[in-house]
Length: 138
Image 1 (tube, helix red, strand yellow):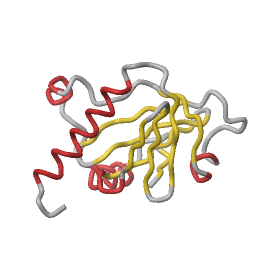
Image 2 (spheres, helix red, strand yellow):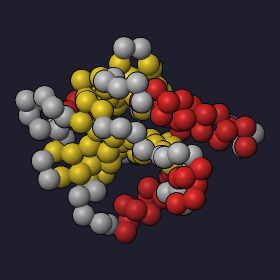
Image 3 (cartoon, helix red, strand yellow):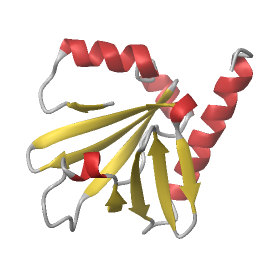
Image 4 (cartoon, one colour):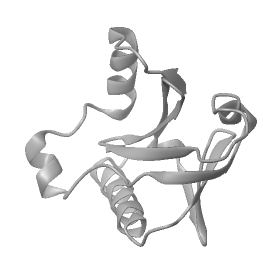
């Protein structure tokens, strides 16, 4: 689900919190050494996301926020901010020279510029594993 989060909307916040869990506390963020990725350049994306990005499609960036039950991909079009919420059960990450994030037919392909993004994706994978081991119904 992609939401326009340019302005605070309590209904959208409620949906995000119910789907992905509430944002980590300050102490949890410190223990985890951060819950957000570096800004990453978008190389390619599915048509539903492409229509939300500025035309010309160069210089578009996004970042990822880790939540207890999923991730939020944040990107913007000029002054509009969008949040793509992805629960762990529908998240696919493919990493090679680039990183592809897929969920329910949508995808974003990121260009990896720094070596600091790899530890963040390892953190996501670790979080997914701990989520599944805590709840045997998955």
